[in-house]
Image (cartoon, rainbow, N blue to C red):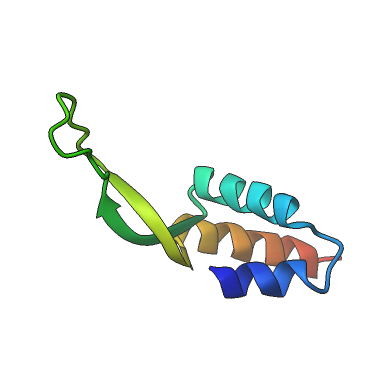
Length: 80
């Protein structure tokens, strides 16, 4: 992820904040996913225990939905 951020923020007009917002929208739209997944850290001895998974955000990959959207976008772009 740091390499991806550096590639898109160093030479372009996009800031780190712009990149993070766009990345979050892609995740929420289920166009991309990140990983690896790990369990939610719980405080030892706590009365409340959270059960769930969170991403470490070490890598990102395109989902099937993201691939379809990219192909659809490219096809409509090629018509012009």
